[in-house]
Image (cartoon, rainbow, N blue to C red; front, side):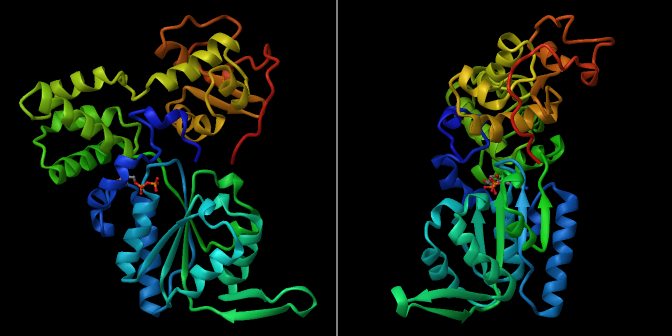
Length: 364
Ligand code: ADP
């Protein structure tokens, strides 16, 4: 994902280098240790149990949802539960069909290949992947020119686990080859609290439950954000307090980071303000919003928009994004008459006219 703009955000769910170092330490290893996503876990447990019972490799799995929710972590958990090797790669890293062929020919039966950002695989690579996923064969061309020959290699039965933040960008044939599709949702407050408490015990930082509550409240339902805020709060209490995270010290640290009660930071507020102040509340296309505040529309789509939608601050219409009355209220901005027709608190009563902004594609 293009993460130029969000790389300085404490609440960005996108991965940073610092996270990479700690991810291994923080990752739950087994399904039972993995907090939240209960329905998904129940489904996954059945899939794993059934495959084990039949002594077969797992079906190909696709996880989709916003960044930082645990797609990579779950892929590792699945590998541990199945007791198989996992190899990690990402769509943009597999540049040529030959790269993929090299990976696949080195897999052993049952092994898992995790492909992050699977929607970013190139055309040629995808075409090699179709028969590989479906029939476990690799069609390659040997030689060049008139003497070139098509050769079909048999592959061991392996499992692909794909992850994507943009299901809508996955091609239909690729999507169809995943036997199990799982959507990851933002976590509930109590699940994030548990994740923060567990993270604190791994980092060996003393924490009161009220401290975990405050951190969780501003983590936008995202474990990666929660663990990052935990580390920033730990820094704060080490320097300014006695090293213990309490409700009070957590709030002081988070206020200093300018993360508000709902976990919104400066970029979220700038996006909302742009829609409201520059485009009359919308509808306005993401590219237009991005250009107006000099941010990448990819960043806004992957990182900002999903959480604002979840909060009910944004509405996605065929003609673009609209700010809801909740957004006006959160930013303490007056609700203009043309935005609200009728009763307050009912985003569906929006008057969609009054903007000439282009409507960009509605995803999913
Ligand atoms: P994604 O692949 O969806 O971007 P990751 O799997 O890399 O997300 O998870 C981001 C971070 O959050 C990791 O450090 C991981 O350990 C942690 N994490 C994710 N989900 C959970 C969970 N359910 N319980 C505990 N930690 C989690």
